[in-house]
Image 1 (tube, one colour):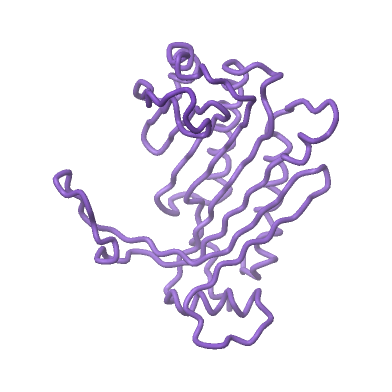
Image 2: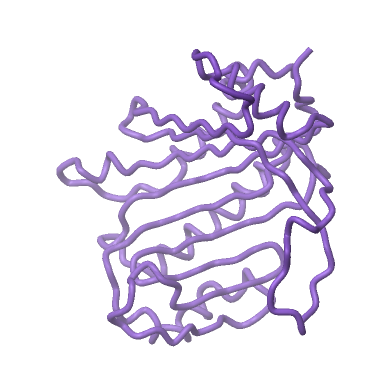
Length: 249
């Protein structure tokens, strides 16, 4: 029997990233950004007021609504979706993610010129809760992927592998052990000892990152959107991922 019950798995986070040629004036385009992206969120955007010569990757405009966030920097647009638990099947969550990603892609194409758009990336983090301890899960990953004898008791394990796929796309996959804690936070308290919070969930975390960065090096490259990445991700989550981990479906 597998150490992980796949039926309890869920997507805990989804990130969609579109890179673009540097635009130092993005922070002055707040009105245009709100006109294009505002309908996706329940609040106005926040202006970070960072200097134009500061790190171009740093956020300039931020939209936040519920478990959804959009960050616009000088060099990228990044949508982040968060999910608390396994209230829906992974396939149903993926449908929600795809709808949001395609909607934001359409809006990014209104906000940025086609010539400015560069690579796309879709990153999903899957959580598989178990009743096992962190030590047992670390040893499970160690025995699964590392063909060496441990020199002492295995305390933690993290595995990351990158592949170059057909169609010139990168697939990066990372396996780790996670621990979710819960505790009360007070606005008057500046620092917290997170280790003192109650552990409410332990499990195996799998991060899948698919991007088309290799395509940007090809002559005449034009950004064609995220549809190809979505297709590869959907296929990978449907079968390949479970075959690697030998999870029972």
